[in-house]
Length: 318
Image (cartoon, rainbow, N blue to C red; front, side, top):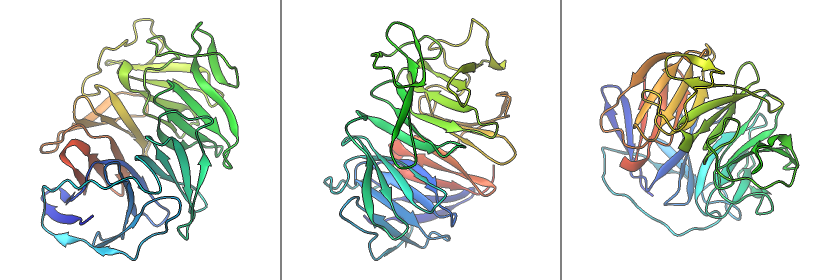
């Protein structure tokens, strides 16, 4: 994989990816990117001049590569190696990285030195999209294929699942064996993509194919959801597969220290800034953005995985 960097009026354009999907920021504020077509995790240095690649269990960080100046339309593909379909990445408080693999379902822990091991495997997972850490240190796994939010301890021990059982029973991080199906009902999900624990310890879920955000207590009780122009609400007329303005099929959520929320919408190819009460602040329409899968606050700006264009965009200020 050879990556390129092109300065733009709004920041940097990084090209040369196969299919960049997930973004993370480590403790040194270095950008992390998962590439599903190259089956690789990439870690940049602080100035985007060099990067390292990791191919999963059985491998370590390689010796590093120099980022070339300019841009490319090349979209490489590599065979699966240590992991198959790395989809999400997050850094924990101890300096390790947690990589969520979709095609070969597992959560892989990458130690600070580079050694990788499977933390959670096929026993619980069918098609996980992302993993995030909550305020208590639990791992919140958005199980896209199972329509469930799964919770695990930091060592991978299973704690329970959140969603609706097929009979409508709420699964509030319990270990009930009840089966689930995709549902439009509040408290359940249709192929959720990400869940994040925010400043008040509530959990926000990007319920992708229901075109909505839902908010739960730390214990798993449904609190409210985001409705058009109302912010967070418990109104019975909340959205059911009805896109919010510029938030059509949300896939990623992030929060900055001020409380502002950043929401990535795969369906509308935009990223939106929201106040902590859910009211819209601004929608960013960057040039040619096409079905982004992740976006993160980074300093005063943001970084976006512009997936269908094979780019990663580093925006200086938002």
